[in-house]
Length: 584
Image (cartoon, rainbow, N blue to C red; front, side):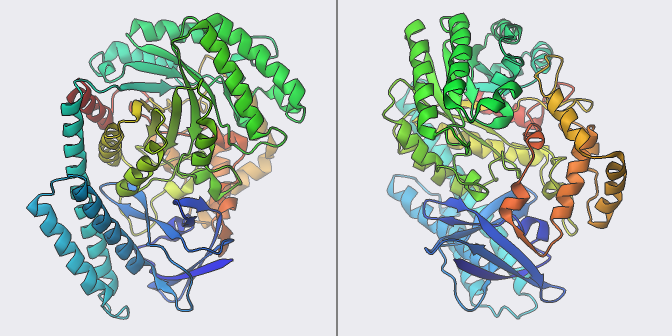
């Protein structure tokens, strides 16, 4: 086991954030880590990070920026030593190292770096050297470190912007039209319909639309299908000149499977019978009508009794059935949390390894790769734009067509206290402005890769303030789950915990912001207080913070491109403008 120790300035690294720090092995793959925090005095603390691994790796730590919100940055490759590292110093060294490497790599590939950016890089390098040679006991050490780190971040984004601008220009010159489409995904069909009627101009941002209806919603009772949901979806899509995308037909995570099916998970033969009966009905009805399908997702999720290889074979069988009805159909396989974030809290096959296993299955046209920024286990941790481009390169090297789905929050999450703003930081850590800034670089970074053929925005709309999680009048079958969760706690416990939440420092105000928050549900408030209490012990294993009831996974993600009342956010205007500028 490796144990890393870091000295950190308490005013720069709130405890709530540091508890999300993690170790990543080669390939930037996260690993389950244990974090403990102790305060040496009023201004400094010690972070101890333990991981069951014996090879060098990088340490990833969240850093708050008013411009980009909460983002994870990493050190250079480290090996434990007897003397503790200084966390701020290692982050400065790690970010500057990436800037220098990217400058060299991109210039060697033909990037023309302006003199102004080169001067900024040289200036940042000199500032780094002065900081690294400064005595950590100097009273100005931390202040200087913050200034140097922020300066390097600004410089790195200037360099990245030049890379994106020139790459997109070169791609546009080389091809008359980008072979790429832009789509949306939404749980709320009514909001989608209302938005397109009210803001027809912005509907031009998308060409396709993916319904997120799951097996649980489409067959709430064995043998009783809700085809009316899909029929309405097709009608609404075509009315707005959008090409409908179906799927995933099955998402291999317990909370997305029918309640009546869960007892069969230990019986693969019975489960297979139910799966193909459901799949046959769905494909016979829509296989020759719908041109784009996501056949399955969650193939690498940890599920007892159902082998990954078996799930892959079942997906292959369903894909071939669609192909027989519609030879020109686009058939994709969904892969969530592609940077390996799920490895932080449970054993799962690394995403790239899963993709390589699927490559020989030629019936699939490509992968739908989903990363949705957030802090809960269903989410992908927000990454620095430099690291994002490095990770995109890894996936592009597969040589298989890619279709990316992503979302970026525009407001704090009501069910995760880590999204709250701790003392010392003014303003929420994610806002419509930070969403717009991140959309800009994420969308353009995706456009620069020739292997990426489609982009979906996941979670198009916020939930209405009065909404019960993701439940609409379409009745997706989740009401029973929510009720069951509420019944767990007695009235006495429910009235007691809010007072305990105040003692633990949880403000309980996230849900009052409206929009996407599900805080109208008392169960969400109760769970929020429970999460806040978990954060109190001195030593907490990261996996324990991510142990979420099925109930909570239903409420993620939270923030879309339009508000609950259907009005577009600034990020939607940005997305529409970028699509118009680069895709016509």
